[in-house]
Length: 426
Image 1 (spheres, rainbow, N blue to C red):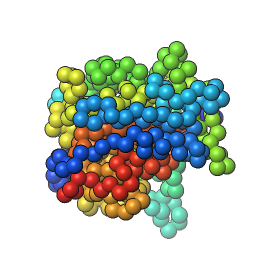
Image 2 (cartoon, rainbow, N blue to C red):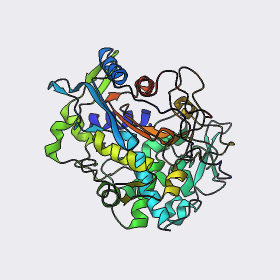
Image 3 (cartoon, rainbow, N blue to C red):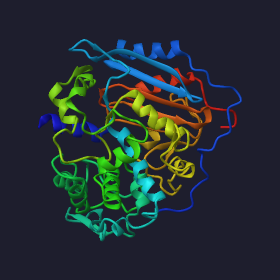
C-alpha cells in the first residue's frame, strides 16, 4: 500500500473558449538542416549518470523519416547490474495523456461530440457543479454555482477547474477525501467521485494541471461503448504496431522493466520490484487516462512519428492532418493568465494534451526547440516531442523521481545545440 501511495503522490507532483490563434504548428522549412551530433548526445546522457541525476538514460530520434540517433547510458536496474537497453520498458506516467487525447479526438472525427458541448451531455454527473469561492468571515468555505458548464474543450486543455491531489484549499481536501484515482475502482466510478468535488475555479478561467485526462478516458468509454484500454489497444496501439505499450504488461516482460529511482537525501535510491509491479496495474480496476502506461523507446517513437506525419504511419491513418494540427495549436485564450507552472516549460501555450511552443527560447536557460513543436513529459522525467519544422521526433527515457527538468534542458541542448533558437523567422 505504501508503494501505491508513493507512486500516485509522485505522479501528482510532476506532468471559456473564444477565438483561437492561427496554428503555430504550420512552419516553413528551415533554411539550414538541423544536424544531429551523436557524440554530443552520447556525452549528455553519460553526464546525467555521472552526476547522479539518473541511474540510466536512453533516447531515440527520427528525422526526415529515418532513425538518426539511438543511445543509452547507465543501468536500467543497478541492483541486478542490468544496463539500459533499447528494449527496456519504462513507466511513462503523463506521456500517457497524449495517447488518451488522440483516442478522444478519433471519436470527435467520428462525430460523437462537439468540442464545446457541455461535458454533462455525455457524463450527466457533471451538471450543476459548484466552485470554491474562498472563506466567509467565520472562516467557513464558500461555494458558488459554476457560471457555465464544463465543456469537452475544457477537459482537453486543463481549464475545467479540477484538482489533481492535495493542496491549500477545502476543495483540494474534498478531492483527497473522494480519492477519484483509487486503483480499485473503474473509470466510471472515478468520474462519479470527481463530480462531487467542488471546482477550484470557474470553468475556462485558469489553466491548472488536473485529473481532466482521466475524465477524457471515461468519456472515451461512454462514447465508444468499449473499455478504455480495449479502445486504445484496438484503435491506436494495434494499428501502429505498438506491441509493447500497455497499462497491464505480461509477467514475462517484467524483467525488462527499468527500476524506479527516487531521490532521497540528495541521491537516487532504487525502488523495489514490488513497487514496479504496483505501477504495472496488473491487478487493479482503474485504467487511468492520465498515467499508467509503460512503453519502449521504439513503441512510443511510433506514436510520435504518427503525429509528425500528421496522423499517419506506414499507410495507417490514426487521425486526419487537420485534427493533429488542432491538437497542436494553442487553445488558451489570452485572458487565461493564471497558468500555474506551465510557463516554466518555456515560451509555450497548451493545445489538447500537449504543450505547444509559441516563440523561440527567450533566455539561455530555456529549453531549446523550434516554434510549432509540441510535447509532453512524465513524472519519472521521461519526455517526447514532435518538431514539424525540422521533421523530427525525439523520445527520452529515464526513471528519476521527483521530476527533474534539468535532464530535459541538457538533452534538448545536446539535440539542438546550446544556442539554438529555431529556423529563421521564428
